Structure formats: C-alpha cells, structure tokens
Length: 293
Image (cartoon, rainbow, N blue to C red):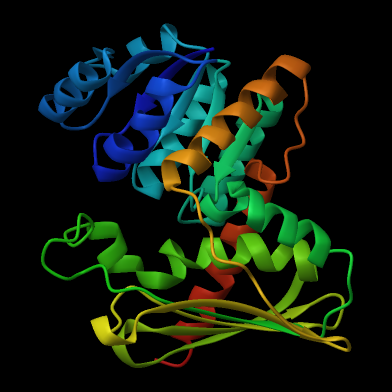
C-alpha cells in the first residue's frame, strides 16, 4: 500500500516514519509538513519524497499516516477521506465533537478504512488483557497517568497544543482506549482540576461501573507514574506494562489498516467512530472542569 506521512515532528520522524519505512506491506511514498525543511530531512532519511503541497501527496498515495496537532489533523483527515484515502490517524481524533463528526461523515461517505492509533491498544500483551477483561464483570477502574513532558530536553516540551490542552486531551485518550472496551459506554462525566496541571475525571458507565482518571503532563519528575487498575467482585487486576516500542505498535497498526483495507472491513475497534466517542467524553470532561473554575 502506498503511504504518505503528514507531519514532521518528533513522533512523525521517530515513530510513524520509522515504522512505515520498514513495513513489508508499505511503499513509503512521501512526506508533507508545515515545515518544508523538516519534511525534506525526514524524506531523505527514509528514502521518500518531500511534498510541498498536501493535496499533491494525497494524489500519489492510497493511505496517509498523520502525526499533526489534532485540530490540523481533523481538517486534513477529512480531505484525505474525501480523496478516497485510507486513514491511520493519531489521537485524539480532533479537538471538538463537530470536527470529529466531519471526519466520521467523510470516512463513511468514502467507504475508506480508518484507524486511530491509541498506542497501547496495539501492544499484544495489552490487547490480550483488554479482550479478556471485557469478558468479566467489574465495579470500576482507577487510572493514574502522571507524565512530565515539559522538562528540558523533552521532544514535546514546546508543543503548543499540549501546553494548551494538557493531559486530559493528550494522554486521556490512551486511558479511555482501555476503559471503554472493558467497562462500556459512558453516560455521565464529572471533572475538576488539581495541582500540577492534573485533571481528575469521574466517569459513570452504562453498566453501573465507575472509573476515575487522574491525568497530567506536568507532574514533578519524581512523581511520574502510569497505572491502570480494575476492581470487582473477584478482586483487583493491574494492566501489564507494555514491553514493546511505539515503533512496534505502529507497525501493528499499519498491518491492521492494510488488512482492513484489503478485506473491505470498515469496523475496526479503534476506527474514527471510536475516536469520535473518545472526543465526546473529553469534551464533556472539559466542560465539567470549567464549571469549577
């Protein structure tokens, strides 16, 4: 499958580009980005072509991998779907429900395959955990994701959208990508801010289970942690740590998108419809936290 890469940041270069360049089912055609110089560097690194116009790249590929800020991604994803291109998108799908809806509508109208890359969902150990946990009954989940990305030397330290939207929108999608398939749809959302840019989210699921998420990108370095705990009548279970790399996970995502496209499948568990569900919960949490400020 002929792939184009949209984006020139650290994630585009070190994860998506790296996985596309070595995947046996991919012809890595080209790179487009808002910084033409960076697009040239990444294209040379992986033996691809740098495109000066995104629509020119879309005309030469079958699918696009997108590593752009979510508001930029949503507009380009809609254009790519309208052009009949399969989509391998980053999370979150968009920064508003309205933008997410436009992407979903474009994907459904074009009949293209889509996948939103929630990294841990493409780790085989986590995938098995999610599938097995979804077969059990749980009272709830507790998720703590304390990252510290704004320190000197971090490749994301100067990311404007992450500064603006915080952990809720950047790592919240990763939490929801596990919580939702295990505990089911959400019918009520509450949220408030805490110290160190933390957003505390309380979700009631239609099953009656309740999950809590504590999310920040600006934790003190000594207080970083990542924990996903399920609890229920039969006890407590902790999600296993991933032992793969993001490049491995993105390679798995590529394989799944290529397979879905070839087989005509349009119902991947992490497709744009699921991505839209995640955006709707994030948007509700954003509204809830603002009610307290």
